[in-house]
Structure formats: structure tokens, C-alpha cells
Image 1 (cartoon, rainbow, N blue to C red):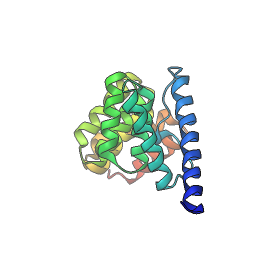
Image 2: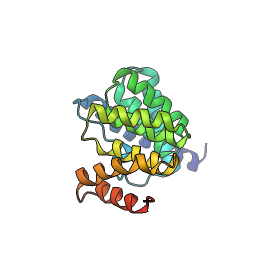
Image 3: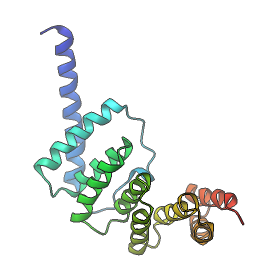
Image 4: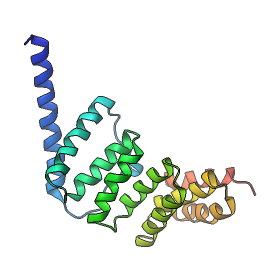
Length: 186
């Protein structure tokens, strides 16, 4: 074994331990608070290699503990970030089997359904998320985007985006809704 192989092995071990501590700490904390999701967080840039390592670590966690909701959500989020919508949909589905009433997970799964071209499924997720939490503007905004952009139904998109603009105020989401409204045909 050469010096380079040992160095790479040690680096991999350290990264694995750090990820294990990070993931394990989040999972043990399980306060029941709302999950932070990719659509709501500006996460620091992670290299594809680091993301692949993290995905492998989390896949090991869910293999050992398939009832760990937070691990399934984290796996879905990482597949989301890795632009792997099919696997993200599946991971979110497992999380939703264990906790079906999480508007953040429903919304993120809906975004992935949209990425796959399943607009009706995306809308169903966004609508369910918004019924569970009428203040969940991200799900409402995403519904407006599907109607406006994907389904070319501005008449359905307009009232949804107006509601987001009104309720969102000067937030980023409120501003995005106003921008989208300006782009819609009258």
C-alpha cells in the first residue's frame, strides 16, 4: 500500500465519521419540529463527490433503521440536490409512509414529480401540503408554477400566485410570485 492510498483511506474515514456524527445527531434530536427542505434552504455548495458519499452513508442508515423518518427525508433531500428525481420521490414516499402529514416533504416530493413530468401528482402533493398547513406558501407557489409554466393555464395560476404575493408580503417568495404574475398573459 502506498502513502497516497493510506492518505485517501484516512480522509475517507474522517469524512465518514463526520457525516455519521452529523446525520446521527440530527436523527437523535428528533424534536418533531418541521423539517427543513431543499426548497426552503440555501445550502452551501456541496461537491458531487461529497454528495455521493453522504448519500451512501444515509442509505446505510435507512438500511439498518427503515423506520427512521428523518433519515428518509435526508436521503430524499440529498437525491433532490443530486438531481435524481426518481430516487428522491421514492425516499420521500418512504418518509411519508411513516409521517404522511409533513407539508415540507409533500412539497419536495411534488417538486420531484414535476421534474419527472407528473404534473397531476405534483399538484396533488402541493394541494395536500397546503390543506395540512394553509400558511405553507411554498406549496401554494409551486402549484401556481405548475399551472402557469407546465400546464399553460394562467387563469388557474393567477389567483394562486396573487394569494402567495399577498400572504408572502416582501419575502423572497412573495416577490417571486409578483414577478411570475407580471409574466402571465392577461
